[in-house]
Image (cartoon, rainbow, N blue to C red):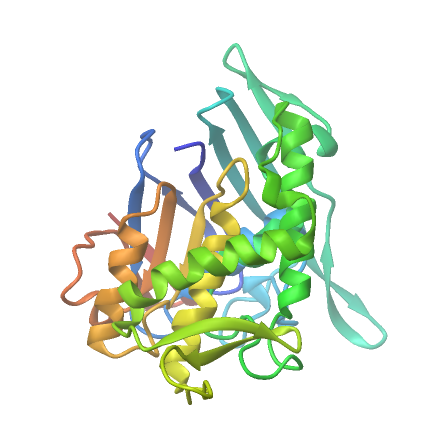
Length: 333
C-alpha cells in the first residue's frame, strides 16, 4: 500500500456544522473503510469535501458554507475549511492539504469563494510549508482524482461517446498523471505507456479480466469504438452488441476507473460514493469481490442497505440531528 488518506477534517461545509474529523485506519495494508448513513446524512458531502480540497472545484454549484443552508443558523464569522492528511508509505512522506472557502456576498447574490490549496509536509514532527508542484506530483496529480472517485453520476462513456468521460480523455489523463508520478519518484514507466493506443490495450485487457468477476457474465468482451467502450458478444459471427442496463453500465464504468487508478506508479485511494446504490445484490457482491482484492485504500460511502451481505464494518456513521440552531451532521465511531 503506497498512498493513504489518514485523516479528513470538515468544518462548516454544507451540512457539516462546526468541525468533524474522520481518522481512518493507519496501516500499510489494503483496507476498506466504510462510512454509512441514511439519505441526506452527508455521505456525498464527505466525498465532495475530499474533491474540493484536492482540486478546488465541484460539479455541484450549491453554496459551500453550512451556515448559509436554509434552516441553519446564519452567522458572518469565519469561513469553512477542508483539511486532509495523507501518507506515502513507499517514500515515507506525510503531507497535509488544506483549503479554505466562504460564501461571498455580491450584487448578484451569494457566491462560493474558494481559496488556494495550502500544503505542508511533516518533518521531525513539525509541519512545514511545501510547494504545490512537489507535493501533488509526488502524491498524485490533481486530474487523477477524476478516476479515484466513483459515483453513479461520473461514468466512462459506454455506447455513446457524447455521454460520460470519453475513453480518449481517460487515457490522456492516466498517461499524464503516470508521467508526472514517474518523474517525481524516479521510475521508468512500463512499455505500454509509450502511447495511448498501447495504454488503452493494456487497460482494456485488465477491464475484461475483471468483468466476469463483477458482472457474473462471460459471454461478452469490451472493445473500443468511436471513443467509447462497447460490449460485444464474444461468440458467434457476426459479433453483436450486447444491450446493457444501467447496473451493467455502472459496473463497467467503475471497473474502467478502478483499472485507471491501478496502472499509476503510485495507486491513490479510491473513494466510492454510494457505489452500490444502483446495483442488485448479485452485482454488489461481484463489485465488492473486485474492490476487496485491490491493493489500495478504499473509502466506501453508502446506506446500511447497500452494505448488507458485504464484509464491511463501517468505521463511521452519519446521522441528521435537529437542534435549536438548525441542522447538522453528527459522526460516531
